[in-house]
Image (cartoon, rainbow, N blue to C red):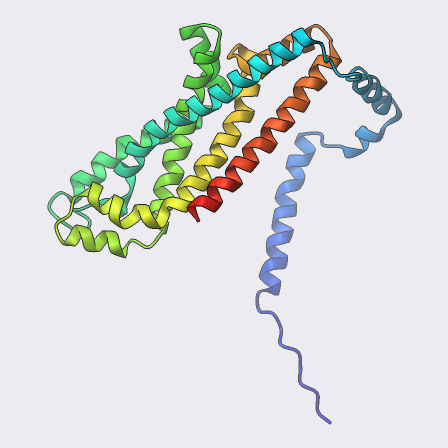
Length: 275
């Protein structure tokens, strides 16, 4: 009776080498960051964390404070929504400019092929510049420019997320089936008709999915930017932390958790509608 040898995975050795390489590269990073999970379970750390968490209870439920939190929550949602809308206004035209599949001169290549590549460079640089600076840094700059309040948060999210959305929008448009777009361009159609009739129907679910995801991130970012004076729940949390009022902080954290659940539900609904 003969037994057949089990086929050997040809990718086993490369995978092992890749895993070993990742571990070798990761180890110096863990050393430099002084990462020590055991410190979390030290007796002194447990005592400190226990006292800190104990201040979070009971939750602050006074009518005056809940009214203030409700206004801050609406302000946070407004910052995230308006900031995402501004980001889309920045991202959409820049994404159309840098998307190579919408280039008419690329078909031939035509006489304007070199000019088209040159024209795309400023748009690519703008997208890189916008997303290279974190939104909290943009918030600090805009707080100096327009003063404390939600306007700085809207501008910070709009600029930072405009670069992120534009980058991903262009990648989504180029990664989908571009044959209908090329056919429309070859038939003499312009960039906008080729986009709306060739790319838009195919890429719409992915565009909506990523935009809603960025809106979820904007909700969280608006809370963080509140710590630098950009309004919303973050600014209220910063005040509560400064006053060492753990009950107010825990109430705000609970509202923030409900906001994330709401954002996830909206995201799931929109994905279902556009699928």
